[in-house]
Picture 1 (spheres, rainbow, N blue to C red):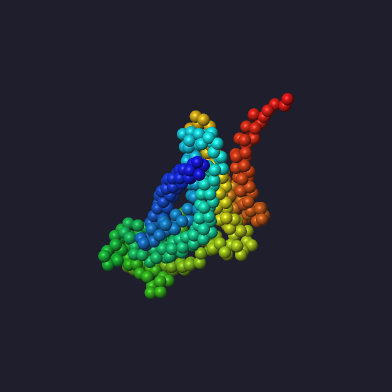
Picture 2 (cartoon, rainbow, N blue to C red):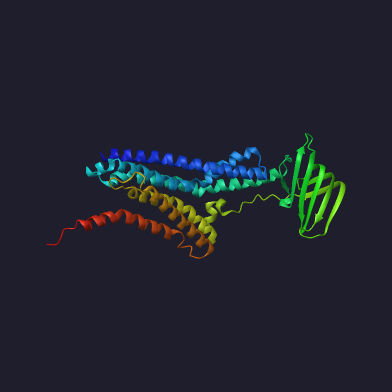
Length: 363
């Protein structure tokens, strides 16, 4: 009977976890789509890279969703069983809690193993690939044709160009250009212009035709106005940076070989997420226990608070290790120990209180 109930509880937990993860992934996907589309509009990413950047962004943040998704799934599933008196009836019939919850904890261990593969290998690779694609997309966007009605930056942001209309042959009409040369600001307005790129791709240029230029220092009465038939303005293209230096994108093997506190903090963060998954699974089982006539979702907010506090403790520990405020040996382990003590308190406190309440009086 215990095995049948254990499989039943495990099925309920897996179903609830899948539903919660689906909701969280939809929220994450919406945020990723908005962020990538905004960045693509500013930097004019090629269309083929947008979907790939969204997919890589989901892989980066998936390791943060799995622990909270599993925690909420267990609390919701077991909370429903308590609310419907199914677990109360099973426990009253003599079924041991370890038999009922063993499968749930086993699920947490399996999920933690998969999460370890994501945090230690998949997520860093996805981050590195996303950064490389983003750099390539920014560089590709620098050479894209100008679009009418859209402001476009040149020269690493030192100049901004706007064209009201673009002819089929690429000629720009009613062009506005602003660039900074130290303290001097130059504003050019031309009837037409041509956007060119050097053969080696190191220089771009805007050739303004039939317009006027205004130069001066903002706030100063000294300025100069010139009328021109042609004004050729070159821009140096910033060199491409293909080297990924972000710690989030570094392979785990390189972090293991480095004594640098920042790299050790990143390594311990990656290890902490699978440990967090196991600890939250163990904590979620007693946390989901409901009293008679208590609402089905009464413990959900407690689970959310526990996760937020746990996450903030790990984030603070990572910052402290990276800054040298605490030793690397202490690292993030103190946060796990604190939550384990909380889990032991939640598990053992009800039994201890029950023994004290029903302790036989001395003769």
